[in-house]
Length: 521
Length: 77
Image (cartoon, rainbow over all chains, first blue to last red; front, side, top):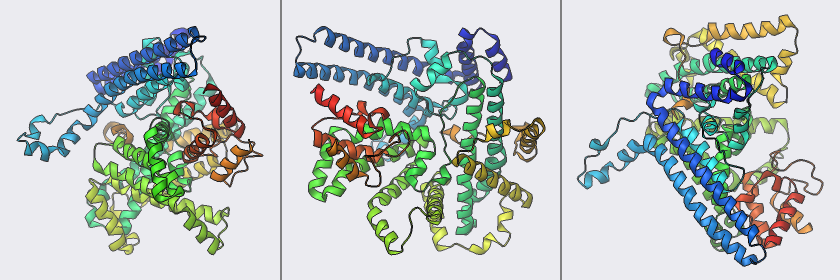
């Protein structure tokens, strides 16, 4: 990283993007060797489709301009429709190719497993077709970036990137390729391509963010990881309350791991003068699951909204469905049905995107069902609030809503954490039918891989993360506040953070840290 | 404009659209469900077809921006 930084700021400003591209491909090759060709191939497909779509947009605009006098409104409309139809085919080809690669690497064996009864019935041995596939690093993230770019080109949102290698940098930028944030070309590409001069303040803020990211990852997430592995590895040995306690901690583990990784990616980018999009906005302060998903993995939510939810909800078929539903179920349900259906598809896809297993689909559906229930039962809630004279804007009610959302989110995480859907349901049953609450106080918690000292460090770190999140929620800019302190105070904070990571971080052999959870997605 | 206000108030009665000073999309006042509901109502009431390409924050950040979009689409027909 230090070498990339040094080279970046030494070479002429115009060539600095090339340093980032070389570093990105070196990083990728170092991690995935020949799978870098998959990334390069998908980059080439996306780039060519983008140029093709832009050409179509330009040609159609020129044609309309040239024949403005002869064309009436209906002729213009029918011409536009014919162009759109051709553009749809080009877009379809691009998505098919890019998505095809993702589906092949990530879901080929999953499809094979799920069609094995059918294949066996047809006299085909499914095992003969099993492939030992390595998942290209970050493919789930850069495929979505590629699709977004092609759809934006189809919609004529901005100009295509004409420089192949500069476009390749957008697809492969090393701090964000592993686990996002999922970037949009119009927000990131120019920043990457413009060389940035060295700025000490940016270096300082970037390093602060990296330190904080490592604190969350190594002190919080990886410490909880030990407990999670113990409990969920033999969940039948524990009562429901221990499972609930563990799944709540697992939620915090994912938060520390993923948001920590994002902080590191954003911090590294900031040193180069590049601002990545925010992927988390204090998600555990959400008052509903819907709001939670607007604060958690923001760029995935925004992607799903712009490229799945809106196009589906506004499609003619969904419109017709809404009109039909209004006749049968009345206005209230009829109007909401297309949005609900689109939302279910979104959550199904979000679940499926996370991994090739039904447990992830179940996790997506869990979220979809809770959001739907929340919206449909809104009138009932309102009556209940009026009956019990609850003030909606009171602090206590807000706190209750946050706690309720936190609990629902945590319980839902049984699905992704369990080995299978069945295991998740068994654990949920244990929470209700065999809680064994005494295990929370009889010393069982100290047999889960973390001793008293570890638990104390964990508790301290949770409190620290909570305080930082409260400060962010109130608009306090912590890095600026730290930077504005005197030299002694400032460096005391930096060294404390550094030593906390060294002393309390969880390390594997040769001081390596555990892989990021979202890296596997 | 009155027609638009009534539609918006029908969907989100908790927002004062007439004296609005914040950006409805950028500041997170309207969510995606609201947007879909608003578009459905606008399409019917003003006989326009708001497509997904028009779903840009600048077109929905204020009632005035929505009205501009409606006028633009009506002129195109």
